[in-house]
Image (tube, rainbow, N blue to C red; front, side, top):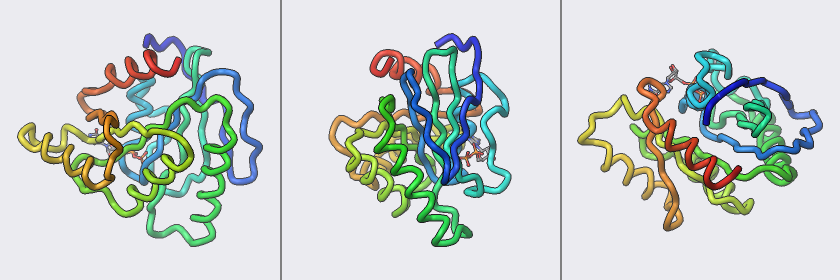
Length: 194
Ligand code: GDP
């Protein structure tokens, strides 16, 4: 994908009406600090356009980035931030559910997992939930540059086993530092979802 222009077109909070977009949407989910903003910035060739988390979990919005008037990258709010109240968690759940249920253009959901750690209970819940909404999440194993080469296969297996991934699920390792995985993600999006 050649990035010609990117535009944060819509920001939706808990009370917002979600946009009735006419172009394909590709959504990204993951716990706070997993590297979601860094991934989206990397995909857009921008350094800091998507918010990077000064206060993880505090921004409960869904952000729609218009790419080349061709598609949207959709930044879902991060989950699993301990300091968030029960009420905020509920609102978060409702917002995401409204989006996953309601969007007519949502083609794919990517779930980000930090390659260094076994998936958490929240990651597993999120994975199962996305599946129950009728999507086959694609997994991005983030922060690839933070582990040794010799550890990669072992950590990928831990991600697969921890989430009990459906057979055939795609897992793409990604590094925001080296951009490894970036082209693979765009190729997959262009091939399967545009
Ligand atoms: P978000 O909360 O999921 O949006 O996470 P961010 O993108 O803000 O990243 C959280 C922290 O991890 C930041 O300090 C990033 O610089 C760092 N980070 C994200 N991705 C990578 C990566 O691929 N490699 C390294 N080394 N650090 C990363």
